[in-house]
Length: 418
Ligand SMILES: Nc1ncnc2c1ncn2[C@@H]1O[C@H](COP(=O)(O)OP(=O)(O)O)[C@@H](O)[C@H]1O
Ligand SMILES: C[C@@](O)(CCOP(=O)(O)O)CC(=O)O
Image (cartoon, helix red, strand yellow):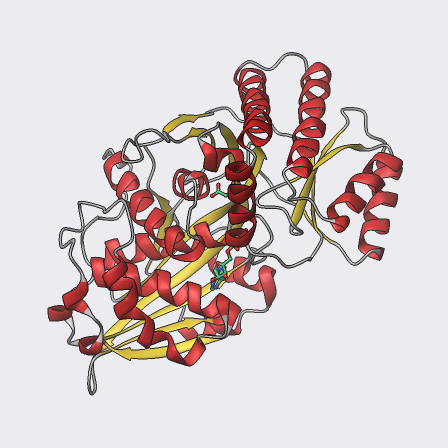
């Protein structure tokens, strides 16, 4: 492996089933064309070997002496055997290493996920290097598009590759096992960031494309059931970010609390959402005519949002997007991801009028919302070797387009595929 390489993973849009998927129900998610890019670079150490994080989007820049990290608190020593749960002893031993940003949840969660994986996948004896991990993402953070899963997958892939636990993809070799390993370690990263993830976000950020995902609640060690939707139809979607900040961990905990307190009320809501995902799966796997397809899916979008609202995860800003898209007669809207703010998707009517759509977009912008043009169902985790891009250049790229132009589209990315 060269001394410097990039890894990248996409965010996702959940079409149906968010929150209920945490409670063992089915969800449908697709990779989105906004991605995280992680530059992994190493040089011979000039002094005490250090690991440095430069996570520019959250202004996290920090170095640790590699030897000072709590290596002895790691109990699972084999990188090919992924633990199912976080180890409380290691979590506690790591905490003092975050003292500088304990009051900054974004930095704290990202550093926790990184160091947790670093201690499992790197080795203290290889510490004759200064290693730097520089991260930039084109995803909005904490907006429901799976930014945490995207960085977790990139970090897992970067560490596994750098430490030769996996090899770069080749077109001729089956990479399914390596993909599973990346996915499993990224799930551990997701646990560090938001506590009780279902695993759907990291699954689709690893594989790309679109998946129907269901985890087993009765046997948490059983791998989730994942069906890849290989021919994902081009859905006419408008993706709106309300820019209302929220944290997935808090919203998931809220729904968990409600589900525990009122099982006879929340349970049937989760069941109904499961029914929506099942019906949508049937439609996606064998779509009827485009008109019928969009009409039936739109109805499911409307019902799923209402049920999420009933679970307490909508927000006035999301309701505003819904009201306006209905007023402008362009289609049905639901929140996507954890809700409480963040993003909404509007499934556009098959015969949507262009002038109405433009008018709506203008209105939404006027409300302070941001719109993204995205494609769904693209590539999953990949590596870019020998890019010739230095850290300073990467950090200097301007905005989303600057990052994409420098290291994204048009580059010789290789993807781990099944
Ligand atoms: N580009 C990034 N750089 C550093 N940390 C990030 C980045 N993107 C996401 N994160 C981490 O993920 C967390 C957001 O995750 P979450 O609340 O699950 O929102 P999302 O819906 O975007 O996944 C942040 O607190 C931060 O720790
Ligand atoms: C609410 C949930 O279903 C999706 C969360 O998505 P996001 O973190 O808001 O992108 C949680 C999960 O599946 O882990």
